[in-house]
Length: 254
Ligand SMILES: Nc1ncnc2c1ncn2[C@@H]1O[C@H](COP(=O)(O)OP(=O)(O)O)[C@@H](O)[C@H]1O
Ligand SMILES: [Mg+2]
Image 1 (cartoon, rainbow, N blue to C red):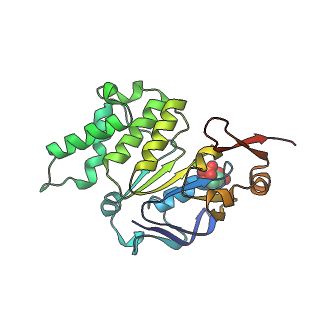
Image 2 (cartoon, rainbow, N blue to C red; image 1 turned 90 degrees about the vertical axis):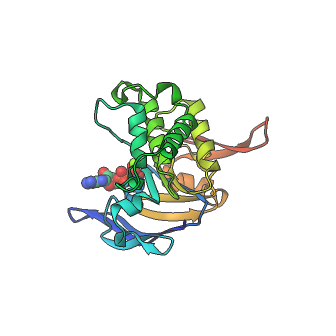
């Protein structure tokens, strides 16, 4: 599915927090969202998910404006993994992930073996099978994060929105989640702080002060100039001696 934002604006109690955001993510593309703390990444992802209502402009999936769709219909296509997601106590990992199937269930379409198979698959995808019966509140931050990603995957979304999904993860799980996300044949918007990880996206957008100030191919966007202007750091690019890939190193001063 194609995800489009047109002239998107959002404000809280009259204070503008996002303005003039125009964005198109083509079907199957992974779009990386980068920007300093407070630049508006979370606010934008919540607008794209239909959780915040735009003050102006609109979000569309394919050609359908989000505001014309019911929450359940949106949830059948769009899943969001929030930065600080919480779930009530006394619920197991398996139950949390099963909630991802909710948008598809009804009196006419009760829980089935197909749902069981989907839940089992996504638990395996995030390496949480061995913890399926654990209570949610006993998990570490990184384990919770993986469960939330599994819950979103259980929705089998056509558009997946991820807000700093690697934040609490150890390095092995960071790499496996990013690899998993890249391989999904769906449209993904992912906010990331690790700019080298962001370089692996198909396209990158830079948020600053509530605006999407630049977007395009990673190598055209994350230039030393941009890193200095927006992030206040100096970067130089080195070649990885093992695989020849270019890697950025960052410095607070030259
Ligand atoms: N509900 C809210 N009420 C007031 N201010 C908010 C609210 N949500 C976000 N903000 C402010 O909007 C700005 C952007 O926040 P956010 O979208 O969370 O940025 P990021 O995810 O890039 O760190 C910040 O200055 C934040 O304090
Ligand atoms: Mg955020």
